[in-house]
Image: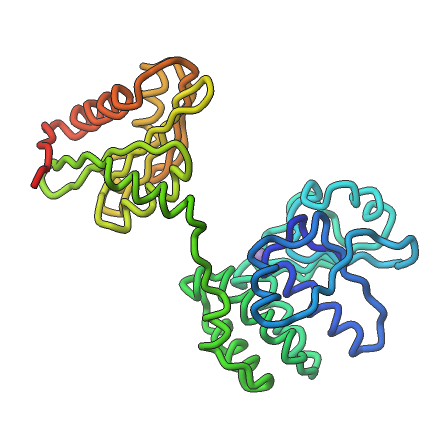
Length: 311
Ligand SMILES: [Mn+2]
């Protein structure tokens, strides 16, 4: 059984659960995780005192390969060859892309691969071990955006997992809290100190610069109440800017358009989505020149002048 490389909690949980289910049914299974698990999984395992159950290479034996949470073969690196000569089962909540399985257990409406694995357990009439239940709950919670993308079946299967395992949900959630590293928190705080704020009617537009953790800062600015957060940064031979916007700007200002225009103006490369975009300029441009030019473009798109906010 193989997960995508650098498995996240959902992929790892799903892999462990399917392995356990197969073993309960009398089938031998090995879990292979290309490049090991992510930092998130390592933290989860150590906080819950769990053993890591993955390996990183396939023995030549197994006749059947199960891919869990793998949507394209490029996610499993050099194991592609191993997979190509064997019968393949796919268990996933993504629509399958370039994998041609002999059997697909794919449910794009499921929040996570873990949700599918938990449903398989329940349908097969088996109960997962406590550790596996913890992993599955963690996988569902993390891949569903803390249940914001849950469907009714998600709650049903979560309730079932909690009941059969006796896991304490609050304690489990606490074990998933992560704190940003010192350097990231410091970058955000410095970025907030340097922030220049403008308003156009009831829109709050915020500009700042940091040289690392730009998106972390931009997201912090949006959470603090900015409708538009533009963060510029200087790197070796380029200047970059990223933008994030609040829901309120949707339909009024597309960051993809704004950043395209700025890319043309500064002869850089830019683009993105309507609420998140990035620009890279390979020239010595002052970060504030870039930010204030962006503000000017925003004023012209909205057809109004921005007023600087000071205390
Ligand atoms: Mn997933």
